[in-house]
Figure 1 (spheres, rainbow, N blue to C red):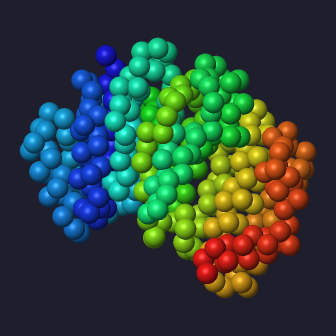
Figure 2 (cartoon, helix red, strand yellow; figure 1 turned 135 degrees about the horizontal axis):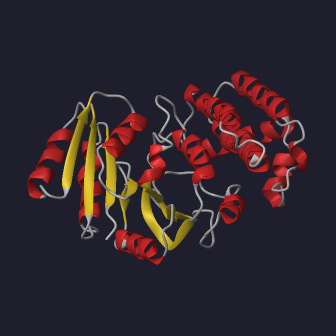
Amino acid sequence: MKKISVIIPCYDGGNYLANCIDSVVKNRVENMEIILVNDGSKDNSLDIMRSYQKDYPHLIKIVDQHNMGLSMARNNGILNSTGDYVSFIDCDDSVKEGLYEKVLEKINEYDYDMIVFGEDRIFNDHNILVKPGIDSDCKNKDDVKKIMYSIYPAACNKVFKKELLEKVTFKRGVWYEDVEFIYRLLPYITSIGVIDGYYYNYYQRENSMTYTYSSRLYDLIDNLNGLIKYYKDNGFYDEYHDELEYAYVRYSYATFIKRLSKMKNKKEFNKGVKEVIRNVHEYFPNYKKNKYLTGKKGMYLKHFNSIIAKFVYNREKNKMN
């Protein structure tokens, strides 16, 4: 039976950690390990980890490190894992009942490189169900390539074959590391299994980077520029040009602009808009011909300019008022 390693990084997550661990313990399968990575927490997180390890000594392993950030906590979890497949859970989230049984069923059905499933975004007064961006299983490289434009690039709604994580690790010291990680990993993936359902509970908190502005948002642009270099250096650029181009434009004009709109300084917002437009035109001057620019989202990306950016800015401001 294939073994699953569940990695839970934690920095000062003591208020949520027990709920996270409980959700995995309740979902444990026969051949499994839970790796709790304490990323230099200053609260009671390590004490909570030790308490669970005492109760489940054969199931739970603790990795205690100095504070190095989420990426290094995940990477060190991978280094200390012994499973054939690896799953990541943020310490303030949880998983739904039956997830790992479903994962094993998919793995036994076919030797997938990656398993994906839906995400349940939980707000104070409502939930939003987010699909993984893939409707059916992919069993060859061409099928995987076709979904690169639509895949939801998060690490926690996926389970990865560990041998792939020896090729690609998480970039240290940046925000939006998941987008960078998933798009570096995808050229190596030849099969993806899809589990029907929304098994990852992603709790939306007020200080989430999704809903607030920080200058670290520019890490997203640096990551995208780094992806271009990575694809060129590793001989992927020509084969995956259209997929990379679409991802670059999508995260520049959609994700970056929407989150930039959370800032209060309109002058700085306009500066960011100019920079992102300049980058897109520098790296992909013919992006409007991209075959994936279809539908309503495609129209927005094709015609994006400073005027549309101002509309997005005003819309987001009205939401916050």
